[in-house]
Length: 341
Ligand code: PHE
Image (cartoon, rainbow, N blue to C red):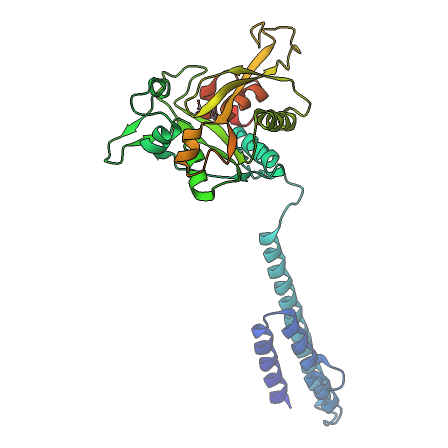
């Protein structure tokens, strides 16, 4: 009997030591302390049957062992709780702490305005096109009615790439006019937002890299009235109100007739101010009716079709919209500037 008690004690302490979690703890506790089937309960019951002279000694021993196992279990429980608590501490998150916010970037003001313009044109059924920035001399000049001897080339000096195909960094988005005509034919409606380059002495209003949005519409019986109507719709979209426009003659070899489109100064309403240099008008975009030679270069019969084209200076528009007085800021990558948009 005595030996049996000691065996149970040894086994119990071994069992308790092996406990890893509260589930196992409960199982072991039940194994020893269950009223009906617990090992200790069984033993205490057996003690009743031993001879009277042995009973007190065995009873005392059994009690001692019971207390020892109870203590070991309690200790184990405390250890387990401690462990989980320290684990909790490790995973603790203080939800009240200020955390550093993710610094999300945003679109460049040029891109924001470009997307806005694209939406306006898409609503009028124009497609949005792309073209190469490294363009051939042919598409940049020749096919736009600017042969190599033409003085108009002087106004668009650019960066020439040494290659047998005579490549240039495009000076405007107009080369995509001919590319689009060749690809899509007539009728056609599209705009081409894009980056252009010129060999400029840079200052607050001149930059070697800038953005334009070319527009081209070709159909039957297209006239200057259509050009003005589309321009007015565009300006209404940009400035969110009706804008008065006027056309002045302007020369570009690829349009005939060619114009400079002015808008009534939005600052002074036409009375004259420093922004419009006291004229009441702001020069906004060059445009005109597509020259028959250019239609021919694009594979379109000028006797059947006509069209208009315009070259919106997106960079200038962005400067006007946000009151930016130095064009160089746009390309500077300076976050103090960019974070304002
Ligand atoms: N491509 C011309 C420029 O950059 C602008 C323009 C486009 C003029 C279309 C007329 C028609 O100067």
